[in-house]
Image (tube, rainbow, N blue to C red):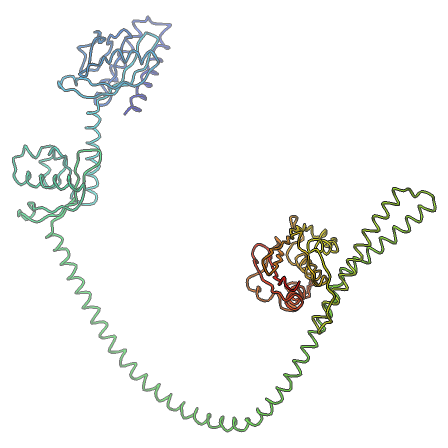
Length: 582
């Protein structure tokens, strides 16, 4: 409503502004003002049932009024007060001086002697020290909207052949299909006892429940008798309306009875059809079963003869099977021996693969030392060998010698370890090692492999742990764990590869944890990873011996046990050894 009034005021302003601009150079101010008033007066006459337009002077004088208040034209409304004592004209002037806006007041509806609320929009017209005022009564708008809603309900009723009625809480009948002559009248004014009783009960029902199915007795228009009627009634939120739609129970029973008759008729027709079809089907299956029984009988006799022949053949071949079983047992023993030889051959191939890296590192170190020696000799002969270059050479040779020694020791220990796995190995000598430092030494021998795959090793082993143990066993375990991770855990294009090793010292045992952040392994092969010769990289250099060797070293050499902690976020393995033996 407010939006509509604002739009109307803007249209009026635009119209008046056009009139002013078109005539300001050819007509006097009085003539232009009269033109504007005539146009807006015509507008009032055409839209009398909607909004009302007024022209006010900023001194409070009413210059143009709608038809119902023409008697106030050219009079000052500055001292006029509404029923609550507010001075609306002064408020309008204050809003107009700011350019425009809304004002809400309570006015007497002229000609009806009735007070009602109205909303208005004022807009300044500074060409003549005027302001335009567009007003509308709430009651007019509500009545107009109510009529539109009733029209819409009637349309629904006519299109769907439904019975719909609308009444308000004051007793006014807004819509009644059965008695259109009572529409617009009040139930209390009809002096009809049935109307009054039914409405009172319905009003009580809606007041208590808001909505629901309500039963009452009502005159049936076709039968002219009082019949039981059911109606779904509901209060319309935000209004004082009650809307309902109902039916006579007898009408529903008649519809149901007709449908039952139709169903029974259809049922009998289907039953007769099924009975006829069923009889024919039964006769057909009796004949078919007789034919099938004859066929089965003849087939049984034929199969019986064949079974007797097969029995004789089985008795004959029994003696042959006994000799075959003996032959198979002999063959099985041969296969077992052959498998052992095949396993031994694969083990030898694995040894070659495993020792290749430390031997290659040692060979590279020796080559570097040889190159450095020649370089120093050359510089010495040319008398260009400085003390700084000599010291640098000595430091490099020390590092390379240490690397070569670690690699050769690792190769020796690997060979000894593989030998111990294949046969009962002679006992190794024990020595005291610092576990953290020893891991670093082992990792150093694999520096080239780690650098190739961009792997960072984080050594979190407790620096205080020293063991009197088989150093070569730990070297093999650490080497195989690192090599296994390099081969299987990381992809070629990975850049943040990491291996972490740490310890947990318990009262009687030492736990050594090894974990990587690689791709992990599939759940389906978790139980196979310690099996000898099992690998997921067959054909890519994988021998399947790495984790198997670790498992056997921990079990047989260190009297410990190996556990898989995690396989989803990389591979996390731990092995636990007793402290009383090491």
